[in-house]
Length: 304
Length: 288
Image (tube, rainbow over all chains, first blue to last red; front, side, top):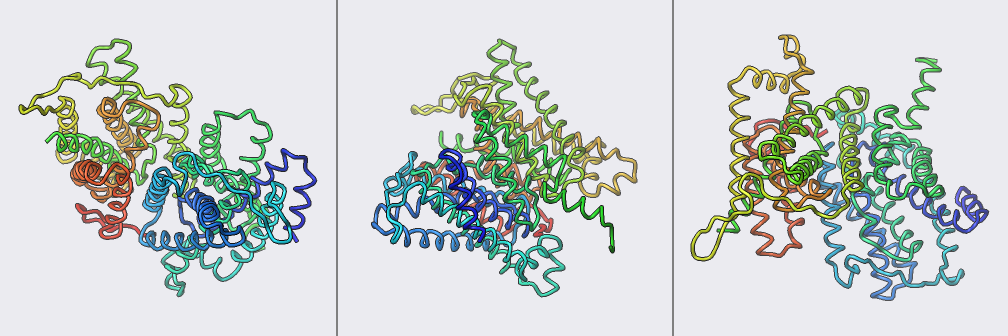
């Protein structure tokens, strides 16, 4: 339902804002994933851009090399993202906090090296150009089609992630985030839950990556830098590191859509993100949804 | 031989940054993602001072002073401003500051590297006979690193200040009860970390040139070196750094420059999985 509403909204917009909305939808999907990892499961990962890149490059490379239709290349990429995410989660099981951040950062670093040195497979420093494809029933995949797909998937993802976070798995993640030892005592399979969190988050980012390649028409290694990882984290921190799905929507909206539409940011983009991140951490450490939650708690008081 | 010396030199820089990381972490519990940017700030200060024709002493004192000030700023932000925030936010906080610093430098100086003349000995080389030569700067780098290490070691084991800092690092509350001004010690630790990073910047500047992202490239290996020391042992950080520098240099020559980051990453994973508490430490690592 939400997906269809999203599509309708997308097409009510004029051309450029519609394009921005497409990018916004992609960011929402990514942020849902990162929020799941950081806000719900409490795992700090800097590898999100790597998975976006994996999605973009893998799907495009498969389409270019093996002439595989889009309906197959995307699931393959997402599956790869899931598995690699699982492995990354497994590697990080014994780590926490900054160690985890460092290892995931290293992963991103290695990924970028692979991209830049990948020659024909990855397009080297320039990236690949995404070929024109067609979908059965719908015909050629134009920009509007891509935007519609993004919007619909974002709506779908919001609902799915919300259900996942409300389920036993979601509650297990929250338990791990707050009191890992207690969680273990209660019988939660902590390693399994952690790797699962990584897998889901990575799959989401990978899916978003395949869309991004279609939306932008190219893949470009500079889109997967550490700054992007920080941007993702900022979306989550500003939105609120909670289990609410509103956070991942609000975060990118404030930090991406508004500057995009007002264009004045330009080269100050990095400064903007760093400054906003720091300010939010200092003034409203729980982000927007977190602060709302705190206010609500204060209003109703304990035991009411 | 040139290769070995080069590896040791870069390893010494890693070691310095790692020592800074270890100092700060031991005292405050914060892993400073912006340590590389502190290095960068020191490097820019050095280059700018050298351009203005400052004499040799000022050239090294300027960055040191700046490093101390930056360290204090970080102390203020993490201890005072971020007091209420969950621990993970402090990590993200230092990450945010690092991005801010890098972006600021980029806006001010652009990404073009600035050339730096090695401190103290300039560009002179030391001939080994048989055609090969080592730059004197390598000696400067290693020498300064060893001096700093020795100075820190002596300070921590003999002076009252040093012991007070160790007490605060081990148990802030008990230290406070005995009358040690905890906040002052933490501020001091941050300052020291900043100063060490700035010096590392001065040493690294002639090797890589001075540009906004120079710190980021060093942070990762420095982190591994500190991890080898378990984030607790300064000696571990020193040895880890030098070993890493040498291994990396030989790996690049042997396998090719592409493999450098991959090998570094593999080493990190290996250390963290195999012996997360570091090779030189006896501390049990938190896994939650």
